[in-house]
Length: 318
Image 1: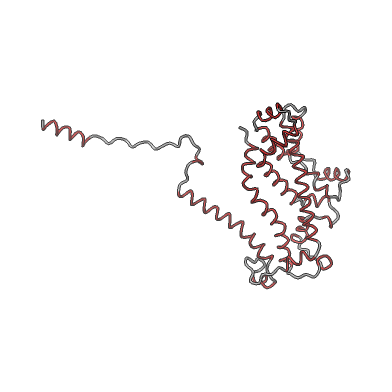
Image 2: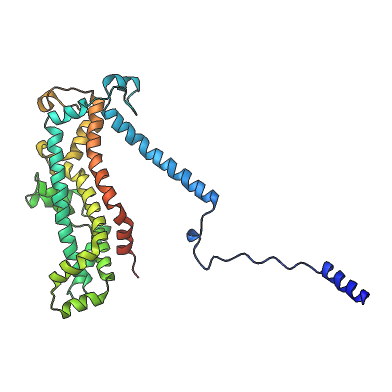
């Protein structure tokens, strides 16, 4: 008996250890959906900090220089992050004259009216092209997509605008860019992804296409409409090239043309158009740049939560 127990004890001590359990699989999830490691989180934080500093440094420099005095600019060799003697002379110089104030009003008007007109036309086209029963919708869609690949060029566009009598008018800044093929495709894809049962139920209740669009489709499209509105607004706000081509009267210049004249080319606001110059030229240039950038920075945070949702919902099918 004792011999048998010793034999079993020896067998237990000399038995090989079981192999280690296999590593837990990720249940078929892609790598980017896995929980990041501590090293990965640290690398992401460092990358975000670097990007924020790279973006914030020139922006803070522009804003600081716009509030700087001549002494601060000379001491800092042109780029002032924090002025020791802050002053509003640059902004007072700008708004005392009429050049920047008039250009700001023109840019705001073109942006608001142009965005509304583009949204109206784009929504109408996208809804019509999303309905399969519309005759010729595929041909119109292919024509719109063709413009994404091929463009007539500067000279034909200029001749067309001049032939239509739009030269040196504000309509020349809106009509050539009234519809963006990219925005049209995104909005059409969103409309097509809406459940077909909504359209059928509305038609059973006697609703027409216009009522379906206004009462059903548009309330469900707030995210994608916000994104497209931002795209159009930025396009019209930065309408520099069209202004350079189609506007000959400097009194009709929008803000981007003023930026080109007084910031890039270094021309000064003369006393005839801007009154007495109260601030150094570099501060005035940076103040004009701040006025051009701040409106978009103020609008974007309100549309940011719709941005990713609107683009992905309209661009991804399924």
